[in-house]
Length: 180
Image (cartoon, rainbow, N blue to C red; front, top):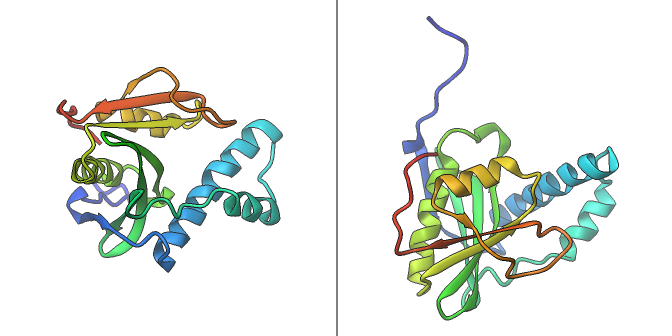
């Protein structure tokens, strides 16, 4: 029986390091920021933020530290097109922070998040990290579920900020449970 939906294979996803200043990276980062900011706006103010407010906020949260020597930026491609991203920033010699995790809404549930986190683990190890940490908001329930499915556990706060409400960590010597 045909339901009219298309099943997409996670095998169509690839993830590789990318230049955070590239047009593709900047487009994904803008979409990421608009997505999380507008979710916050709808939850706390009952509406999306204006383009002017979003662009000012984006300008106040640069991602240039997601490049060597302070970090790394990854782009996930679905059928060759840039559709997801994640950044890593060094906190110390053995710890990196995961940030700017985003999969375009139309491709969520296709395995892109799982593929992205597997690449994050490999990239973090390549940076010499033994641990990955992140902070996020409580309302980002899909992201939090993705992290916990992949071995992240709640940890004590390691950072502060207006949007840091819950913190997660993952020891890279542990093997995550499979799942997407």
